[in-house]
Each structure stands twice: as structure tokens, then as C-alpha cells.
Image 1: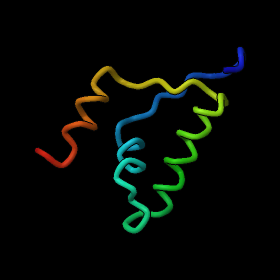
Image 2: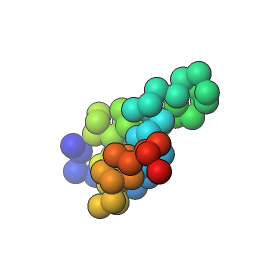
Image 3: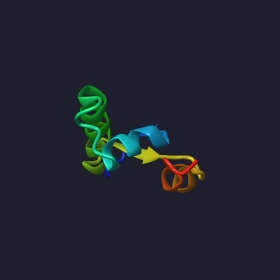
Image 4: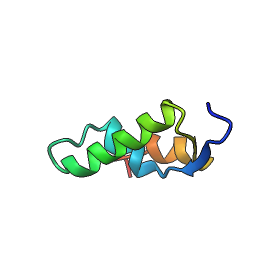
Length: 63
């Protein structure tokens, strides 16, 4: 990661859009979410998330 990179907070819906592959229901949101995650992986910025992210993503669709 670059030293000058910024931290970007990502909410669970960004991960869910990619994990659930919502290409058909909302392709624009899917593509944007995927781009945000990929830029973080490429080192453009550091992705940070809530400590509750695992629970939010893990419980998706089961409530």
C-alpha cells in the first residue's frame, strides 16, 4: 500500500452487492461496488469497515 493512501469506510451493502452478484437487479451499483473494492485491493486507499461487518454480511437475508 502506498504511504499517502487514504482510508475509506465501506458499509456492508458494498460487500453484499459484490458477494451476491447483483449484476441483474442493479448493474450500476454492482459495478461501482466492485470498483471500490478493487481500488482498495490495488492500494489506491485502505478499506476500513465496522467491527459489525462480519455479522451484517453473515446475516444477510436471514432476518
